[in-house]
Image 1 (cartoon, rainbow, N blue to C red):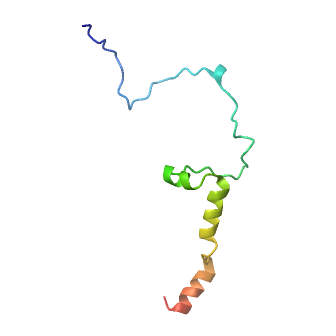
Image 2: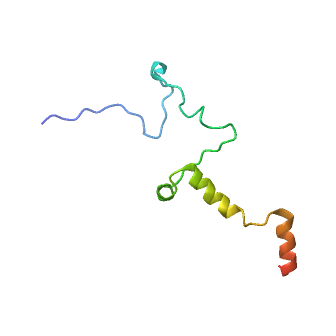
Image 3: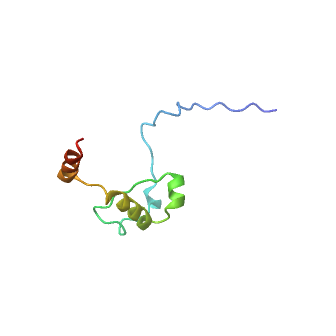
Length: 84
C-alpha cells in the first residue's frame, strides 16, 4: 500500500497572491445586450424559482404586492383619520 503524498497547500480560506488567468478562452458576456442599463439582477431562492419561471411572472407578482399599498402622504393621512 502506497502512502499518500503530502502537498504544501495553504489554508482553504486564504487567497493566492496572484492568479494566472487564460484570457484566450474568455467569451463576451452573452447577457450584456439583453439587459437594459437600469435593470437589477436578483437571485431567487430555489423554492421561489420553481413557482416563478420567468422575469415577467416575478415582476407581475411584485407589482401586485406594491399596487394596493398607499404611499407617502396618503398613508399618513389615512392613519390620522383612523386615529393611529
